[in-house]
Image (cartoon, rainbow, N blue to C red; front, top):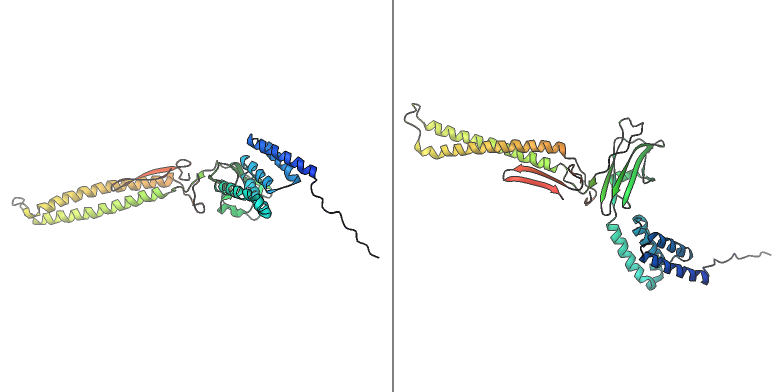
Length: 323
């Protein structure tokens, strides 16, 4: 005869444990009110060990947000939403509040772009804040917590290049890791990252050079027109130098003088604009867009966070910049 023995059923928390958890939950709420986020989180962790309700999960995420652990907070809000939807109307308030908190926090989440310069070899590894990352992160923005972040590239277990970035809420940071020419040996830390925000890059250089070239072309055209007017007037003048020139062409003589003046002015402005463009080309740095809106921190090569440049035009000056 075969006999089956049923295993012990899963035992949920006792009434005493639930009562203690309720009291600890109240303590956590009080600690939250006093902005003791670490103490409050510890209290909610203890409550969750007994019963991880939607409300408890929400408050854990809320504490994480105020502790600067934004990635964990967004994940926590998602867990609270899942738990709230499972129980229905009794957790409706959690659904509304957690959704609002998660969306607002996600919108302010800092983003970090890792830019690698140099040639990578098979087996090279990228670590960000100690975590092994897909090297595809070099072409996209990585969501991070506000604060300091470290990145390094390792080859055969040894660090080739490392750098750090400090990023505040709502910012986009770029950390450049430039591999050494002798890529078999490690390199020192990279310079602090420049902040990016869709900078103007070398646009002012292009604008100034374009204006200069246009002015120089205009100078050549007006000079040719002035020479034509001079030749026309000269052809009417008697060679003896006594009889004089055709009075009817006095207007053309005035035109020739005006065109000559305009030609000289355009030549000077064009040369100045081209010179400005050349200077800006070497001063400014290229900047690539960061997937959609790059608002976030300055890559114009002038001053982090904002850039400004002036180029002469035919009507005055052209100001190009980001503030």
